[in-house]
Amino acid sequence: MIVLGIESTCDETAAALVADGRTLLSNVIATSVKEQALYGGVVPEIASRRHCEYISATVDKALADAGCTIDQVDAVAVTFAPGLIGAVLVGVNFAKGLAYAAGKPLVPVHHLRGHIAALYLTHPALEPPFLCLVASGGHSHIVEVEDYTRFHVLGRTVDDAAGEAFDKVARTLGLPYPGGPSVAAAAKTGDPRAYRLPVPHVEGKYNVSFSGLKTAVLNEVNQARMKGQEVSVPDLAASFQERIDGILAEKLLLAAADTGAKQVCLAGGVAANGRLRQLVNDGAQKLGAQVYLPQLKFCGDNGAMIAAQGYYEYRAGHTAGLDLNGLPTLPIDYI
Image (cartoon, rainbow, N blue to C red; front, side, top):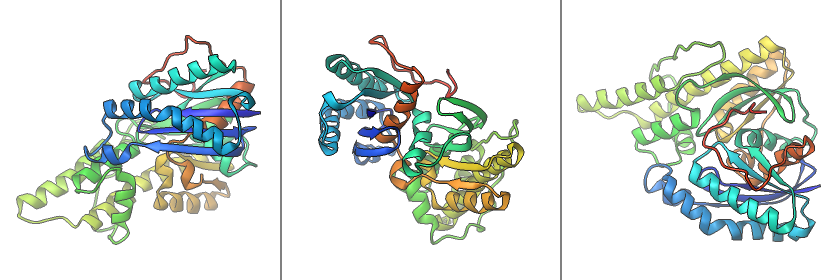
């Protein structure tokens, strides 16, 4: 079964074809990230306008790269939540029109479910149940994946998401957007023990909080400037990265130990962070758990993950009509 996946929740316009939820046939991404970087972050209006410009050609190229016509596609899957609502609606409305015109089933896909499904493209043998940390610009969840369409959230951020914290700290340090890669690059030459950043305390055994950590970095910068000094950007970047990655890994591994999970996974844009991958891999080995990490090309937003999850949503009977609407927020366990 061939599924066309369409993704437009933030600043990537993406389309891909995947066979049977596991085999990648094509994967095309058009991004406005360079334009967004001029403003230090995503401007929703710009993102929506670029989606309108890019989406038709992106889908056409995905079909061409796969050597398929729309007639050979069995279903059209699209991210319908959560995300920037203007951006989401571009993808949803395009997918509705395409599915209707081609006479294909329309499959709505939750964005975070898609990030988890990216693991199936990297690890075709991986099957639920498993434990997954989904960390991105807008979300930080520890999720028990009970089945392909059944999810149980154990923990989440109570304020800023991990990716959001990386972006804001990067801006504080004068590093370019997107913040995750910029902070990681700066941290390579820094001392992670140079600054003693706080460990936030939060209710909920597996919950995380990053607003205080972000503020602590800002305070270090401001206090140095008041003294006529400058912070060491590499050292502060390394200290921040070590702290936030340590918190994420600790919470995930604590949940793995408590639940007895034998398969531990990372997903989402923050899963591309090398230090986080190392911490999770080392910790899971001590627990005797197998670690599954997505290929770097599947960490950020892409259409392949939506096509992959769309296959399983379709098998579960989760299709939609032309009344499908986009949503800015929606729990991963909405059904």
